[in-house]
Image (cartoon, rainbow, N blue to C red; front, side, top):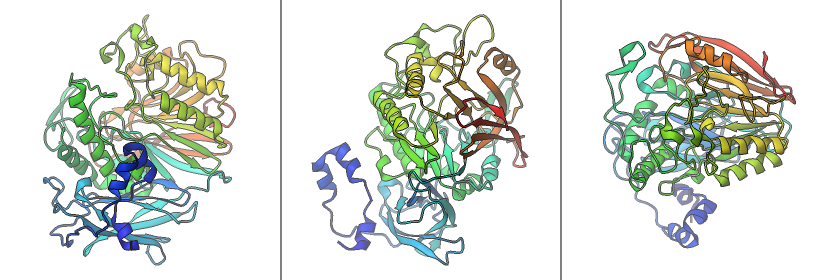
Length: 531
């Protein structure tokens, strides 16, 4: 088989296929040896409407992504139902004078004409630039960064955390500012899209307000629905700039499929077998639109999303999935004063396999910092400062048994320098992790940083009045803020520093960026200090 033909075939992981389908299916997938029929790529409009992206940085390379969609809102996104050749280049300089790697990939209609190229053979710890060409059309360039060699002494890491970017509730000014940060990578904690129908108005505490911009179409269910929703989000130039500036590690939360979904349960009473069809469509669209490796290719309504990345000997980054293996939320997923079901013994958040994988990885890693990059808050905040106790039942606080298993496991393993990165709350938080937040121990098990939303929730304010009382009633909570923005984290061998970047408004495109707070965790001392 020629090298060209090898490039033309979808590069699926042999181990992934064997695990998911068995040896017979792997052999069947490997049978076609003839060159696929490739359409002549002549486009009436620019096919790179959705931009470019990179992700999953490793010491020898990363994934580069694009998706051909000259007419993003049309069925078929303006593409023929045929495979299209796409050339790619990775260069050592932004002028593309020194090409490090190049090749040809195939954009297939079965995957929405997306391209996921797993580039290898690169040098560690340095930036590269990449671009794509289809026919006579060329994409703009993106920047990616390779990781240090595994175990190599590493003195510095700078990355961002972002997510919760409801298109209808604000502009993506924060993404444009993030693109200028000179980052090693971005961790996107989820809620990349929102699944609801387009609405001219949304209700707030102050009454109805007009949405900033409107979703295309009704609530999304089918693969084509999800493709169009991703297209609407990815056409935003500020989001494209953030993708082009640094590689991303992407995970999902709930709105990539349906609000507060867990396992095969959504919150609309849909039978599990029917919800599985929606889950399958949503997972395929997520894969098609994120810079993920082939090992994440969905198998029916399931997807291997939890994974690990090492940044030299400095950071052990554990990317978790808190949706796919979780049991249903207790007490009907309502905010309640008391809910005995939070102590269910059979409850799960990560599931046994993911939990064991996490503990083993933290125990065996030589890295200085152990980072859990996930979606929902681990701090068990009392959301009612009155005589009762109120929980966010969609967070770890609604799952006391698996939460205790997680934190006790970290404590028993004597895991050092544990930092949890979280999203979902549409606010900034920083606090300590204890087995029981109502009765904190003498020393925290770790520190949690919760990063606010890019746009979800609208303009916001410095701190909501109810959160002033909630913070006063929760000793482990050290900081709270209710504005939009993102987090920038600088890690070295002495400390793990969080910088909460906030935008004063997202209702207009001219929002001003500022640093609301800098907090740091010293190595060897799980406490928060002003930085």
